[in-house]
Length: 341
Image (tube, rainbow, N blue to C red):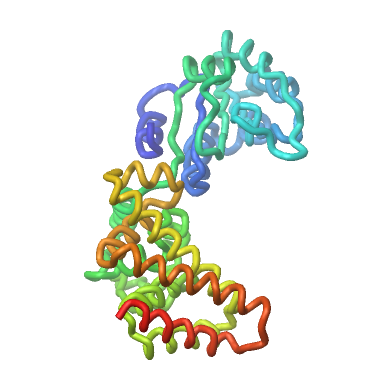
């Protein structure tokens, strides 16, 4: 079940006794939490809402609270946060929990309590008995990262609901500047709406002025200039990054990361893997893989490899020589252009 379905269900029917919110997109985790919190009237929340960090709180203490009767209300709401014992690994310093306690609770959940397991992980360990029991009882809510089209659709719907329109290209600019990260996109919604009020028309200029480009996005422009052998443009982009107080080693690290992704996507695409499979294997945001595929298909493997190896050499030189970063990058461009001509 996704978050919109959860919100609709909670408005139209009685809530389930157990929910499991699983996924690493923290904005979706927060939306699920708020939707469930809205089950309890504001005046009752002090007595009937509890939240426990299971990396620091014993599970028996949290479940004892879940088994208590509501206080002057119809329902209790208990959040169990960061249940690392349900995953394949245990966080450092996490409190050791007895999973059988949760299994026992799931066998006989308290009817007047809604127990919500907030699991900000990619997935739970389905091999564990407690997870198998949880899947039989709980309603699972997905907080997995959204792809570009999903994020775009939800954010557009939010603007429309609030009575705002987006100028042609404004949403594309927002997607580009946030790398289609749903959390980042939503974090700028109120800011953009405030700026556009009372006209309620969000322009490209507003997005450009209010939503900063990430280092990854700025470096992506630089990657394109390198691959197109536009030496003047590439040097200008590089100098602008330095002028913006970006550290040379950090710039180079992002460049290396971008070219590594291009190489990986190129190789996996040549092996016939689908975009979805590549995303799963590389564990990279879908939007980054989409952009990488569009770029990688224009260049051969030798060109991408040549650039990647040259950037690895820059990293070594930045750490071992006193040459200026601009000179090292300029020498890299000269060598790269000569190699691919």
